[in-house]
Image (cartoon, rainbow, N blue to C red; front, side):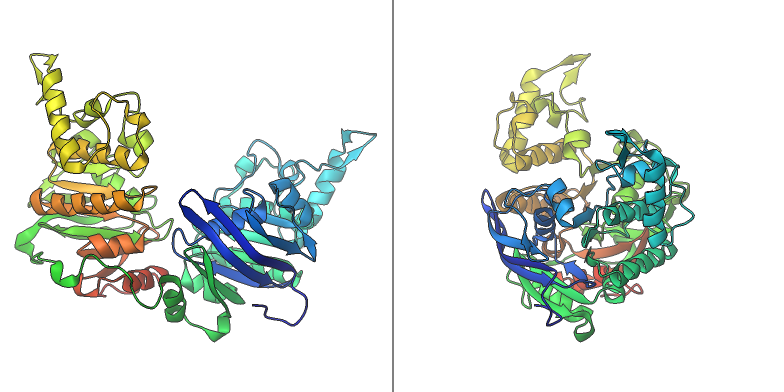
Amino acid sequence: MSTHNSEPLLAIRHVNKQYPGVKALDDVTLEMNAGEVMALLGENGAGKSTLMKVLSGAISRDSGEVLLGGRQLPMDNTPLTARAFGIAIIYQELSLLPQLTVAENIFLTHEPTSFGSMIDYRKMHDMARVQLDKLEAQYIDTHAKVESLSLPERQLVEIAKALAVDCRVIIMDEPTTSLTWEETDHLFEMVRRLKSQNVAVVYISHRMDEVFQISDTIAVMRDGRLIDKVKTADTDSVKVVEMMTGKLLEHKDRRPEDCTVVYDDAHVVMEVKDATDGKKIKNASFKVYAHEVLGFAGLVGAQRTELARAIFGADRLVQGEVTVSGRRIFNRTPTDSIRNRIGYLSENRKEEGLNLGMTLEENVVLIDMSKVSKRGYLSRSKITEIFENYRASTRIKGTGKQLVSSLSGGNQQKVAISKWLHSGCSLLIFDEPTRGIDVAAKAEIYAIIRKFAEEQVAAIVISSDVRELADVCDRVLVMSRGEIVHEIMPEGISQENILHSIVNKGGNKSNG
């Protein structure tokens, strides 16, 4: 869809991208005009990132065409080719080199020269000044090293870098994740300035308030397809959420009536009061009830993992208290937490969840060696026996003597979960438990989580997958920028309700 009758600046036509077993882009056709700010929305795995990587040259498309100003990008597009054509992407993780100056970053790979191949630094700084002045960033010193700049200032340097090569399409990927509201307003001013200069901006975000504030159009993707592109003024957040999820849920394993949790103070197994880390977590308070799976939802930057790590003792709380079964505990370290029977399954299983240089059975018994050792000697037969029990119950595909590094992601995750089951914890925090895992393994892990809550007291699930939260959780808390902003009780649990709460940042605490 085009919002004007003029020839589009950017035309994406019938673009496809296939990965083994997954069609990441399915016949995507999309147009943008000069000076248009288009919000690109969709759930995780919808195809947004893949499409932007195709545009920016990070990956190549399998078929279809991409035209900018009538010129077709080659099939073997690269980041340098894309920039030369006029397409730049500003990632959440900025690509600037911190040890170089602002000017050196802006003109990296295309420095002005004189006397043959000598870099003309005076001219480079003058030209950098011109680009920054376009953004009214006169306060940024072109001689300053990037490492000395604030995040908003670095974003301005990234934008200036794109303008320096005459980019006509700039892609912004979750640009406000780490910004304050004041810094966000300043970024929006920059976006409007780009718009006035006829630069097209693709704005990727899940923050619905931002989308309606800054965009002219909204394009929604789902399952690799473009669902629709509409004028922002002609729609609302409810309609957008419906496009993102589909009007009807095709799949819901867990129903509200499945919840048997008793929500009264006599059944509280853990309570967190006014948890604050002095940096990102702000007065977080919540309760976990016996046999409950409590979900934590939120956008990137909501600080859900940071809250979990602080409760577990991996990071430090400067204020607040944690009580388990009415007893106040002090988890200053993960060892304290394990002693208090609280476990934490990290979202980063390869670096924090497993020892890749050890076997499957060694990983499983790693936290609690008391059951496999006597007088300082390990019982290899006991280690094997314990592993075989978990191999059967969690359906690990692998032998005990294999290195865990040789397993698929799903089987590695089952080993990491088995390690915590063996530790004897009564409350286990599952942080992104199915990230990078196939559908079949996901269903098995959901069953493990439910069984854990039923048999070993309670579980917390942190997930960016809205469907996952709807399927496995009894209750969901929504976080935004370090605060718990909304509560969805069992009767309100649905994919649409959770996503609607996330994108609208929750509002007041209620029963959803």
